[in-house]
Amino acid sequence: MGGGPCTRLGCSERRLRAPWLIALPLATALGVLIPAEALRAEQRWAQGVFPVSRFLGYTSHFGERSGAAGRRERHTGLDIAAPLGSAVRSWWSGSVESVINDGSCGVGVVIRSGDYVHTYCHLAGRVEGGSYRSGGVSLRAGSRVRGGQTIGHVGMSGRSSGPHLHWAVSWRGRWLDPGRILRAMVAARRS
Image 1 (cartoon, rainbow, N blue to C red):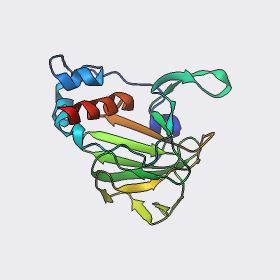
Image 2: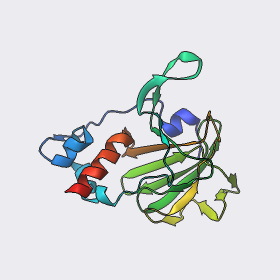
Image 3: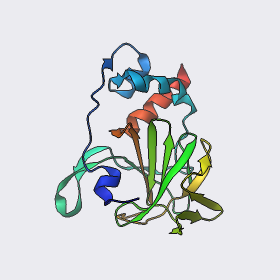
């Protein structure tokens, strides 16, 4: 996949430009108004799977943060601390769009689930010949994955100061706050 880390992970958030809806409770749980086209996915929020098997905490939120050398930067995902080697699971069923091996994301996997794309960075393992391998996991562009399937392991590849997963989700190319998605998953399970 071409482009540097900013084009791949999006250094700046793009705002949703579609019509907004207000009335649905899960839209409220997301904390944002959602374009009508995205609402079709809300019935599936309860099927989402938390992306790490062994959660230790959140180390960096979605949005503005202090980056390298103290400069403000846009963080397009949620950083989830977990022990080195912990299983990373696919949030939803879909197909692998690409594998990544660069200086920012490190080793990573990009999965498409319809209009949603979820990205997993800082994985353990390696990318060789267009395939990602870690333990018994072997994925390449076009591989089908199920929600909850192990797709990798927590590592420290790329720009990382400790073992964690950078999990990012976009809808039609617009970055969404994964923390709000997690809250929507909880709300959907309660209803």
